[in-house]
Length: 248
Image (cartoon, rainbow, N blue to C red; front, side, top):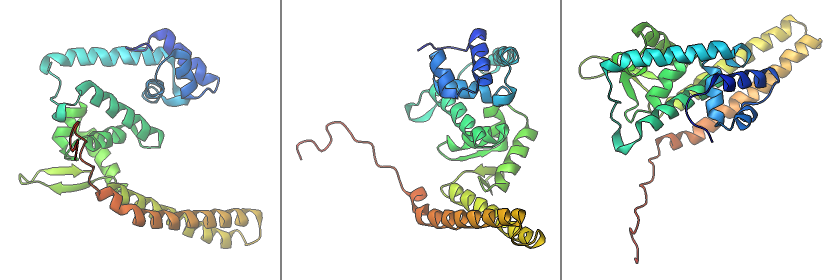
């Protein structure tokens, strides 16, 4: 399987594959590349409907040039705890960001969320996020406001009175609850529409069915989240040690 950056001919093949309606996995198979490489390439360069091979190639060269210009300021990669491979961690953050973007999270918000999730503390200040992501403070502020509104992070003050943004054990539970509340509002509004559009008419029947479906989904989402909440607080099992407990 080839490595390194995508070439311009490969980007042209991606564009042709998208135009033909091929799935990312099929395009990747034809290029002999990982699916995540193709997915990330498309999502960072206009998405499946806006991807252009020539523009994507120029954008990649521009990003590489900016990184080279910034390199003299800090040529050493950030140290990683627990013996982690810094390049592998960076690659995973990009993949996780792409997955969040595919689920509908805007790019900057997805980058901030992935950055927080992949830190052991799950907590960073605005300044730390600016340094890690190499973006403006305004971009971080906007992303944090969005994630906060979705229940995907919380704010707290540390001992130095700095505001920290936290992804804690309960963040996914709170996010699911926020999503269920939003769905419940759609249910209420849909049922109001039934009366306005006159019960029994096609439009009213459509709204009633939407309300019934979403009501069922919302109730089951809340129930499942409550039942599974303890999983978010469970501790990972200690890694097995070779030879440990042998002969016992």
